[in-house]
Length: 475
Image 1: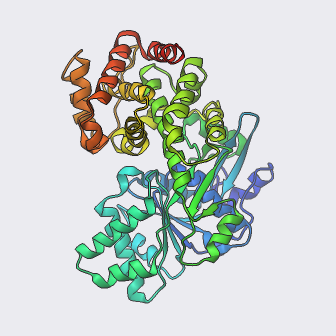
Image 2: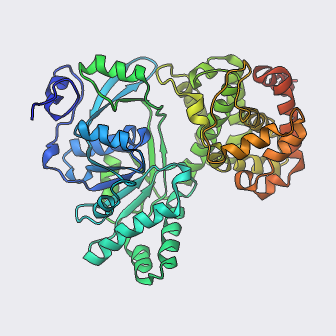
Image 3: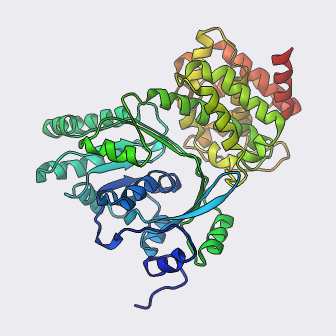
């Protein structure tokens, strides 16, 4: 077979290294995966995979990845054609650099190669399973896939695994453990349930890094930097954080992860709540307000003083009072700088996806806490009003867009069926307990405030509504 000298792969890695780009310095062909990762998307490849790449670079060969795409063939097959190699552009406001990651040693597609995935989980070399399947991915299908792999390990007499959810869910490891135990019990397999409970570990974790979806412009930048095609290139920011509970089958793993910059802690909640509220909560607010205002990405939003002021006050006045992170002001200010990074081009529509699955984690806890304290919810109400307006499917300039959400059809119907009656529209959209929870569904004052801001947005636009709120704040 003639080597492909025009695409990033094992044969062309030397040419990339000659350009001064960081490339793997470890013997990839002799390694076997020690980590099975479910959810082979951009975030994992620019976050956990780079941590594992560092560990491999430092001589810890047990951290190679078997990457599992859950349904899509395209990325898994593209990575396979590149021998698992891909480049990440890491940018801050002053500079950019490229890093070729070699941690992905093998790829599979769960929907196409389920047996391969089960065998990978059940392999003697596997020590960890990590997951980034998004909030909507924690289904019975996922639990049964994990259980089939665990059952294979149990039958072989192999040790249990550390199974780490890295999705934006509070108590993500605890939830996943309960889901797997319930699935084992529903099978009537008490022995497997006991083995999972006693031999496996499900640490809670918090992961933080802004990773936009890849764009043609990013792929073109990669080609310029590498002198080769890279169909899997992506970009991210300099900042990253991973806090994980001190709970692994092998205690030595905590030491190794810490050596690569991971925070191994006894209680993840302080990091988890701050990230879900301050970063993810404000991100969603930016996304819906920005999409309705016709803005393309987060940096464009934060570049407008009115938007920046709104987000700053949203975080400081209505979210921060309920997070336990002592450095929340520094974290907030750092977030505003990160959001302003012009190199990321983080699409507001990408962030706006799957809102019905995210609101309960990102907004609802802060709204409830503020209401219970008798404190203001005006910024959160304006954000919720922007979500209601977003669901119409067109921005303030008449440009249409698709709503990407598991509940899209129902939500769009509710957003349109009452016409200009904002009170009826908010009552319909805020009356869904699967999104908002029972307490907020029953909260008439909350609904009135959202209806107020939806009427303001419909009448004057998002920017004017933000200005009206700021004026009221400073009066």
